[in-house]
Length: 450
Image 1 (spheres, rainbow, N blue to C red):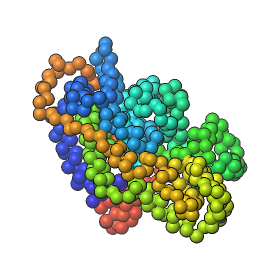
Image 2 (cartoon, rainbow, N blue to C red):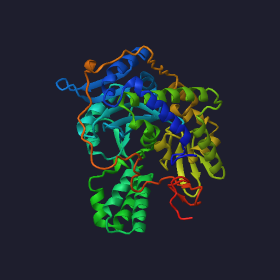
Image 3 (cartoon, rainbow, N blue to C red):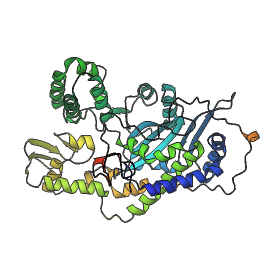
Image 4 (cartoon, rainbow, N blue to C red):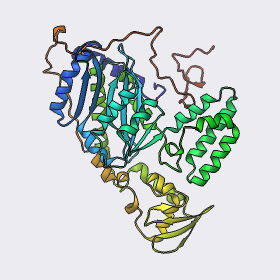
């Protein structure tokens, strides 16, 4: 049986059983904050040149913040796309807090964690602290693009720490924000407005963007006008940008969701283990790849070849071609550009460019960004994260504690155990084995009358 995210429930139960048993090693929720001292030292001994910062109040001795980035992830980020997805997710354990994460994408569109931190909440000071440590581990020479939601603290901190970087907003979050402003609009109209906003975001040229944004404004001049007032298109429109989704961060949050209820040191070690296992598996898997491009990108290239095979191509010179599909576009192979702008936006040849390559006799692989190639992918996973042995772990007594847990007042009501989907988010439905209906329940939780 699988859960809403497609994971085997029996595996999740077994995993939780193992992690709970590790409480005896890493301590309970209160003790675990002090165990970060020992754990960080062991991590540095087994994985030299990691980047770790443990921040606690010198006067009260209480935990404040924790940042960690493994050397294998730091060094191999250059083998990934220059995109960093930023997001935060809450904890479910006894001591509440927030995990901030920076995640990249590899050449096969896979999740590649770079760094994460534990803070009390998503504030401007915490985001600035996180970004300043992140700036110590990422290559500042690369032209980075950050993708996030419109968290005010993050927006304010980004211009301070990474003033030269591009900052894109997640389109899904923007659609939800627009929907929330439409309080007195029926559901169908809300969906229509969100679709029009999506059309604006994916418009490939400035001209088409301006046309579509006027259509959006006409639907609800006051509400849409107020929504767009402080939302510059350079942060969310394809005509000005290349990536606006934050799927990577959402995937990272789902990836670690079971660990979020663990004591802090156990949580950090669980994430380390997941990263270690993921890097090892992908290293082994990629060793069997025989093509030049990563499989997903090779499949995309073949699909574009198929879609463009009937188009008419006229050659102007060695590099410039006119491609006539339903519209006429200009492809310049030498400058790696197409008048549809998709090649420039994605760093991957569009179908117009693909058919131009077919007529030019040039090798299309030579004009595809290096991080989409198998060799670059393998380089990204050459790093090694060593296991952490707890056999020789020293015993601790309460008198040895230097770091105490933060002060936390439990809020009223039963704590949430499941992630609450955002408005406008499409949640995968499953078919119940008892009633046969599609929904969010299964045979055990079904409440339908039979």
